[in-house]
Amino acid sequence: MNSPLSSPTRRYLLQRSAGVVAANGLLCALGALASRHAVAAVGKQTVSARSPYGPIAPVRDGSTGLPLLALPEGFEYRSYGWSGDTMTDGRPTPDSHDGMGVLRVTRGDSDSLGLREHDRPDGSVSLVVRNHERGLVATTADVVQAPSMYSTSPVDGIITIFYGTLPIRIGAGPTFVGDTTLPDPPRFVGYAGGGTTNLLFLGNRGVLSTSSLGGTLGNCAGGATTWGSWLTCEETIVDFSLINGKKHGYVFEAAAIPARSIATPIVGMGRFVHEAVALDPATGDVYETEDNRNLSVLYRYRPRNTARRLGALQQGGTLQAARIVTIVRQARSSTLAEANNEALLNPDIGDEYVVEWVNIADPDASPVFVAGQPGLETLGLSAGPTYQALSNGCARMSRCEGIAYSDDRMFIVDTTAGVDDRERKGRGEGAVWELHLRTMHLRAVFVSGSQTAGNNPDNATVSPRGGLVLCEDGGLGDGGSRLLGLNEDGEAYVFCRNEVNLSANDVATAGKIVAPFDYRGIEFAGACFDRQGSVLFVGILRPGITFAIKGPWTLGNL
Picture 1 (cartoon, helix red, strand yellow):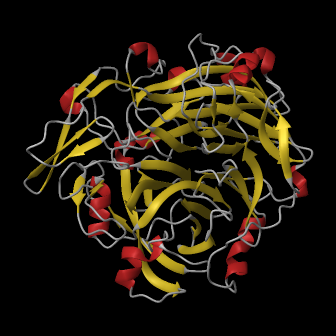
Picture 2 (cartoon, helix red, strand yellow):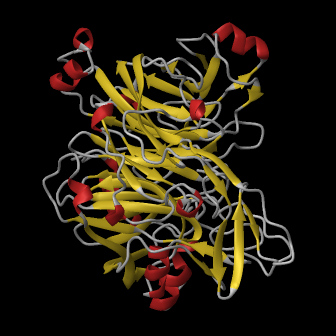
Picture 3 (cartoon, one colour):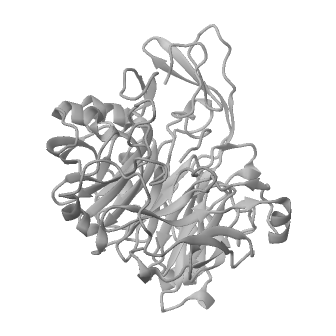
C-alpha cells in the first residue's frame, strides 16, 4: 500500500543533502505447490495463465447499476460502504479503504449489536472489519470517531532523527531535509485519521456499518484471529510524541463489538512499518510482514498468554525475525551471507531455503537511518526492530505485504521482489513465498517477470477451495488493476479488473459524494471470503468502495 502522509519511509524528498533515506485447515490446491515446484523450471512468469473461469467483461453493480468491475460470466456483485456514505452510527464512511477480514458472528454478538432480525443460523451473516489507511486529517470532524480511540490530540511540528551527527528534519508530505542551511520542511499538522469500521452483510448485501477503532495512522492491512477479532496494522513509524501526539507503528486489536476494541498498542508485536499478519492456529504464533523498501524482514510473534481471547496478545511475548540457515535450491548461487542480505530481493521460481528465528531484543526501538543497503541509492530509514534483525544477519526482503495461512503454510507476498529495467533489486513485479510452518522451508512459488503476469501483488487471501487471491497494487497500461488467482501450478491468472471510471453524472446517479475521476489504476485491497466461501469481499482504496462478489466459484480453485 502507498500512504505518503502516514508512511515517511517512502516517496521522500531530501533537499540538497547526501540523501536519506487466513483460514484454518484448507487442504486444497496450494498444498500441492511444494511438490509441483520441486521440479519446476527456474525463472519468472511473463504471461497470464488461462483462467478456469473464462474471459472477463464489465458487469453492472447490483447496488448502483454502474459497470464497476469486469468479471467472468456468471459472477455478480454489490457495492456497499462508499467513502462519504452515512453509516448506521450516523457518521460518514471514512475514505482510503484497505485491508479487511471476516470475523465470527455469535448470537451474543448479534444481540449486542441489536441485530436479532439479521441473525441467521445458516451462516449467511458476515461481519467484515475494514481498515482505513489515512494519515493526518485537518479537524476532529474528519477523524474516525469510534468508541475506542488511541491518539486524540492535534499534532503540530516537525520530527528530527539523526544520521550520526547530521540532524534530518522530517515534515509533512513527507519531506526530508538534511541540509542544515535550508529552512524547515512543512509542519505536521492535524489529527490521527486512521482506524477501522465494521460492516455487516447478509450474503452479499450490506446492512450495517459503524466505526470500531480510531486515532491510529496508516491502517494498511492486518489479519483476523481465531477468537473473532481483527489485528489492524499501522504502516508507519512516525513518532509524534514530542509534538503533542503519540508514537505510531503498532498493531491494535479491533473487536466485533466496537466498544470492546482495544486502543492500546500491542507493543510486543513490534514498532515497524507493518503491513499484514496471519495466525498459525496450531501454535498461536502470529506471523507479520513489513513494507519498507529493502529494509523489511519477516517477523514472528510468540505471545506469552496463549489463552486466545481478546486482549491476550497485549500481555507480551517474544518478537523474532527469520534468518536463512540452509540454501536448498537457488537459480543463482550465493553464499549464506549473500542469501540473507539480498537473494530474496530477486528470486526465481523454485528458490528454496530453510529459516530459523532470531529474537529481537527491543521490539519498541526507535527508527535508524542506514546507508549502503542493497537496491537503495540513498540513505534509508529502518525501523528499530528491523535494524536489529538485519544487524544479526536476518533475511532481507523488499516490500512484504499480504500474508495468508493455509494447511500449515503461510503464503507471503513480496510486492516488489525482482529487478527493474536498471537491474535494481527489490524493484520488480512481485513474488509469492510459501513458508512451511513445521519444517521452516521457504520457497518461491510465484515470481512475476512482467506486469502482464502480475503487477505488484499486495493483499492476499486463500479461498476454501485452496486457490490464492492476489490484489494488484497497480494498473496495467490502459486497463485497470486486477484480482489475480494462483492455480495449483503456481501460475497467476486474471479473475477481475477494476473498471471504476466515474463521470459527474455517474456519481450523481449513484447518489454518492466522491469525486468524478478515472480510478481504474487504483489498487484492490482487503480480499477475504465469507465463512461459507460463497462471497468474496474486496475493496478499492480510492475513492473507497467495498464489493461483495458471488458466482460459480467451483468452476475453478478460488
